[in-house]
Length: 73
Image (cartoon, rainbow, N blue to C red; front, side, top):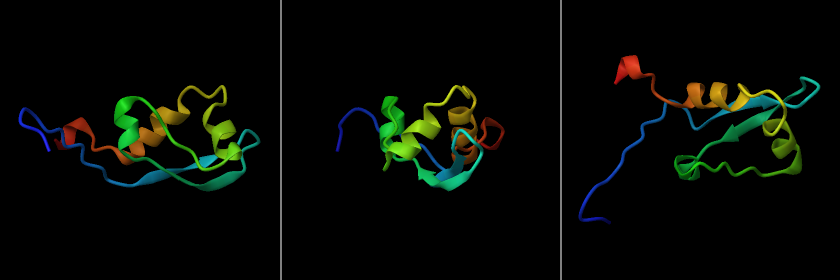
């Protein structure tokens, strides 16, 4: 795969539940390796709208639910 380095990013979960702008719960959004490149893939326009809302902490909450806390590393 590589001769120089490999990066391992452990996850506790594949994704996290999200809600749309009116607070209606949606299916879980799954995060994959594209997140490491600073991108996030969604499956529908509704998921896109929910994730691109004005709630700046939404993505941070999703990543906190997926990632391993520094205190556990």
